[in-house]
Amino acid sequence: MAFGTHAQRAAVISAGVGLSLVLFIFLSVFFEFDWYHHEKGVDIGALVGLLLFLIVGMSIHWYVVRGIKLGQPKYLVPFIIVYAMTLVIEAAFFIFVVNHIVVLNYLRPMPPQSSSGYLIVTAMFIFTMGVQGVMLTAVVRCRNYLEKRQIHDLEMHVAEKSKLQHPGITIVFGSGNPDINTLSSTTEPRANVADAPPSYEHATQSANGTRSVAPVLQRTVLQAEDGTF
Image 1: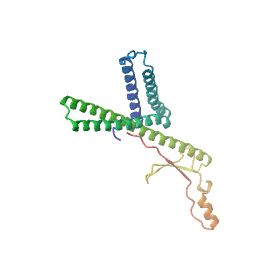
Image 2: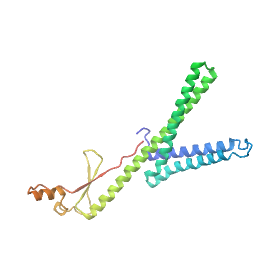
Image 3: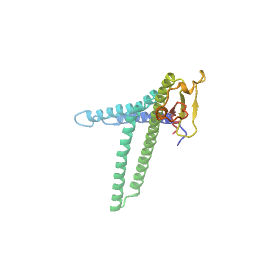
Image 4: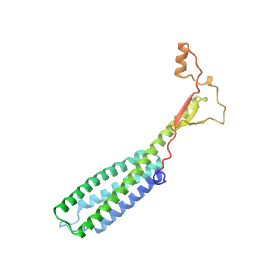
């Protein structure tokens, strides 16, 4: 837990921030860009690129909200892929720019105004990458939580079907700890151990002539983590 916030809530906040930034950048570029600067009229290439940026940006952030609402971790994958690629490209560009600044400063000293401007741009770049990294971490943790919860629900469905077929079965909830909580049915009495179907080990021991106490038939269901971020 980094901020005391559930992974789902952190992912929704990240998606909301991303949607707001996409809309802000689109509107800023659309109204500030000089579309009639070129001789041929409207710059079709820039307009198509801006529309693609809007569509892709809105889609990947909206898929995060949709995936959390439906409980499907697959909808969070596009966000993770795009943001991971963006961070890698930004990191490579940042290293290139810093190296270029260091080389220029080594060849000839820069004026104080240029140095302060480079420092401000570097600080803004690092802040932007940090925010994107936090957003990516939140969505990754949310995807892991949704995936574990999906596995838990599937195991519970299988366990309930097994309990209907064999009423004497015991559903055991475990999270990897030695202390486990056993959930038994309170509406109907538990059937005898002899009523439950024998296990493979019990049948093998009977065939070999050895006898042992038959264990209680159990099905272990792993509980999903709380998903705190």
